Image (cartoon, rainbow, N blue to C red; front, side, top):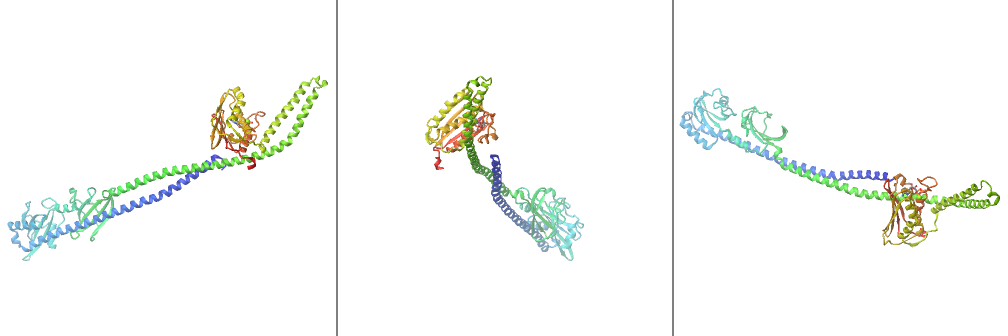
Length: 560
Ligand SMILES: Nc1ncnc2c1ncn2[C@@H]1O[C@H](COP(=O)(O)OP(=O)(O)O)[C@@H](O)[C@H]1O
Ligand SMILES: [Mg+2]
């Protein structure tokens, strides 16, 4: 990395990588924890609902089977303990009916049918005495089976019902005792099987898939259901099925000697309320934690990386400073070598020019028409030699080692002198040179004369930069036991590109003859020799500030 921009890019890239890694490290356990908590909780709850449903289904199956068997047994006892002739008398049948109703509730009516299929006696709410049943399915079935429990049908009464019929042989002839069962009783058993309020259903289907007991929806009784009828099995079967966008838990069991299929369905969504709650809570915790992680990660990495970047920048600046100092030292050495070599010829040129000047004043040359021209030329030679000497002496400033004075210096008074010295020039260009000194500034041990040169260089540059109409502020402040001098101008400022070059020897933006490009490089060398730091801050169209940070004591040459 060679500049601030690259450094910034490097740290920005590193920071992004770092953030991504932290996010992953923090998110993965969080997601695992949330996911497994939810998964185990929901499977446990589902398992519980499943077991509950199985238990209820088994319970209802047993109840209904028992109910039907009880009624069939009751009827058998009645048929086998009474003769046909006895029961065909209406009052006898009525007695028997009332007696049996006491033991076996849910009997709606009772009839006795002879071997020809004619109902010879009937007790019940309808008028069914004398009805002919020889063609009825149930009649044919009971003739074969002795005891028969029918499917639900409409019959003569045109109301859904089912019957239990018992056949008895008497004197070689069969007769039948038959009762009608109130289907509401079984409907009641079924509706109490429902687990929750919503989304559940319980019903009984015949072998052909016809609704026998329809549960809550009475309209569908005796209609065909679209339930896929399973083959006969023992016990309870239960499975999850998806139907119309819902997830149903469906339990089934065969009843009544595998004639009827009982189905109990439970909409899981209604039962999984607590699971949804847990899911939402887990999600909420996840979101809040994520938010905290994101915010804190961004905050912490930003802070850490800002610090790192600052450190990196300081290191970079230090390296730049070192490179610059090295370069200055090398140039200084070279310059002092050259200066030595050139100083002598310069002195000779100057002396000879003086001598020529003196000779020119003699009579015969004075009368020459070129006299004035010659005099001006010798003066020009002297002037330019002086300029050359000045450049050489400044160049030698890089390499000067011996001449640092160590005195208690009051920086405010040094700047006072700078002010007095430069004010005339500034006023001439309508520039206000202002003093903003901290009054109780600590005095520092340094070289006042060399600092004066630095201040003058900088103020001179500021005046040149402003050119006309502006302000230059000379500010002093105590800082870290030493002093910070800031020279602020309202000049045109410098682009970043220029700022990186201004401390280089011979860098100038001024026309030839006006600028040497040595002012700031010399100043930089001096401030560094005094153990301080010279830095620049500048913005185009706003102005420039030079900071000269000086330590309480400058390091003595001997200590270096
Ligand atoms: N206050 C300032 N405002 C704008 N530019 C400046 C300022 N001070 C210095 N510079 C720039 O820095 C260059 C180098 O300055 P310096 O080393 O003193 O050499 P010189 O003054 O001979 O050009 C100047 O030519 C000028 O471009
Ligand atoms: Mg200058």
